[in-house]
Image (cartoon, rainbow, N blue to C red):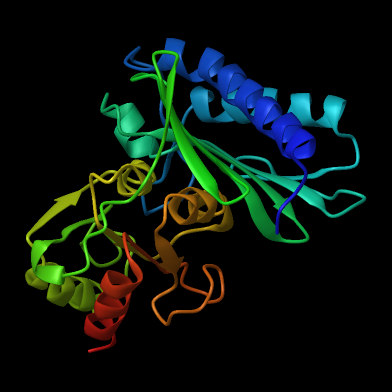
Length: 271
């Protein structure tokens, strides 16, 4: 779905302001020795003041500017809206990276219209990198320089660069035993594999630096911003069955640089 230039420009400008507000909360706390809490009981799932405060300031801005818009965020759940628009926020995607001082975490911002993401933003504050997607295009901003993004165009698994956040099965990782085995089969078909990049990997795919990102165990706030960024750069993203992301209960994603590479990956994953 496309929107008028003035309408989408308005929302892109606002999403950029949200990202800047989140940066003001996350950057001073990065590599600062801040306190880390566990919000998942036996399975360690870290959360920090940077997560909470980053989401808080974004929610406040949305509520003041777009009172009718809904909001869903990782830390504070869902606020129902009065119309078709909803913002989806993940203040720090990759909190594990954040608490280890690794600059692979990102802030994710999506805007949905009737449940479909029409704007996506991936922001890496420490390196000053930002990927923005809307109306079928993705562009990249760094050091005040902006350029269009295109995927690598790789079509063959044997030359592909693949990534997943954690290839280990649960409870240590995010995926089930059979998913871990399927990913291992796929990774064996590719040229090289890299791990622990969370949403940053999808940004690199849109940038042409990675060719495949395959994951499971994602929540709505994890993937809502990813589809516009990947698709706007010419890539393909679905779940492991080829259905839209979010169609399954396991939070599966397969993002690929090209339709041919995507089809080849799905075939291997299916076994």
